Image (cartoon, rainbow, N blue to C red; front, side, top):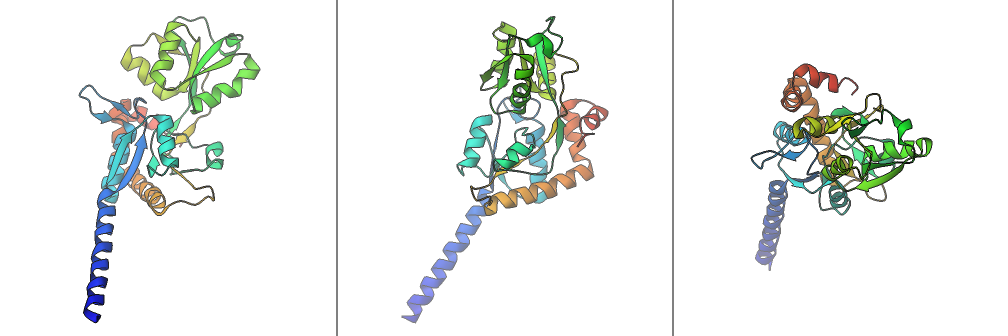
Length: 268
């Protein structure tokens, strides 16, 4: 009897050890967007790359953890986190009080981004006052959408919602909407790299907010152990790569010179 009990205890111990190893090997599951250049996108060779992608990789290396990065799109990334199918998301998510109030829990900020208005190249729309009676495009659930919504009553325009940025850009170029609201660095990169016949309207930027990795609290405001661990490790690794220069190298890789990269983060 005693021998059987000891064998049972030993078996349970082995099983618990195996479970722990399995959990460690699995690492974190992180969701992200699919088309948010230069933060996450697919390059000409089919590789998934971008500022967010490289920052997460550098932080993971610094902190010694493994992860799986799932490219799901903006709305699906949020849904995956809320359903417990992902531990967190990194997708150019702006840190705002509204999101915090609805259960988002953010890491430290890693890039300050403004939102601005973009129109067709050569458009006679020079500011918000020229939007009266017209339709503008926004991407659902983004800070660009929130920015447009905050202005629509004052300037008398209506908003059309799109699921992704490329479709929204096509709507502006095709005349279905006269303008769109988007994160300024994303819009600038898309116009430059895609040679799009679009232009950012000078003077339409808002104050902006920093991007952060996000995890999602339960209804009672608590985080799972993995979510809390991801947040802690990300913050620690981010601080280290900012100090040792890796962070600046990543920004310079995608944004140009180190001076341009530093200018982009002055407001952080």
